Image 1 (cartoon, rainbow, N blue to C red):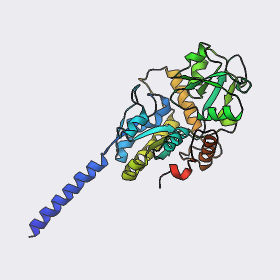
Image 2 (image 1 turned 90 degrees about the horizontal axis):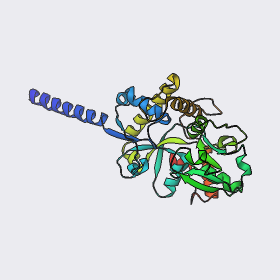
Image 3 (image 1 turned 30 degrees about the vertical axis):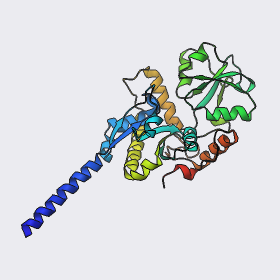
Image 4 (image 1 turned 180 degrees about the vertical axis):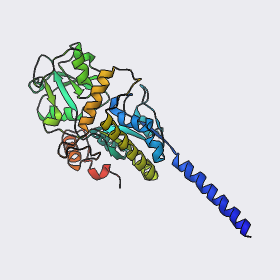
Length: 307
């Protein structure tokens, strides 16, 4: 009898170990919202340094393609989390897809408008202004309406070719990406022909990690482990100023991008990387977007956070 009980216990323990190992190595697919670049360095660090494995999460990083966006993958449950700007996440939620923020990386807004011929963007009413066709320009649309600028928005896919070619009078740019691309073309960018949204009442947080609330509710422990390991990756990147290789861009741009992304991660008030949504910025973004008819109803801080 004792031997039989021992064998049964051994079998149960072996089964539990197998289940725990399976759970610990549950596959988790993460898709950043854009192609590989230093904007996502902390996640690459967490993967390469083994932080995800140490946390017990089997992470695979799959980037979006021309025909398959990151959010489309999340909608189809082909990916479990993606990065989104706060305003993008709000628009998606407003369209009926509940999301939850499991990690906030950006603490500040990096959006700028760059104007041609040393003109102040605020003096160019009716100007043709480049805007990304896939989003990111919500605060610019709000500012244009509130300042009665009546901009003529001209969509572009990526980079700065329209602006450099003179096809538009001004263009939106991210301070960590297109801004440096323009500098590399030899353009002289000064405070006279550049408008930084974070300095004019539009400092709304940008990149965070989001997943559907349905997936989160079924995988809370996994989501928490992924978030903690990702934060660890970003903290390592900040401490070591890591530079990613093997990507289709120049190293100088990636080094500049990483430094600016890390700067935007530091909260202006505390002077620290906080990795959290700020309720006041959520409220500001929601109010502006509702007033400018970009949202049908208010999205609250409570709607976005884990519960």
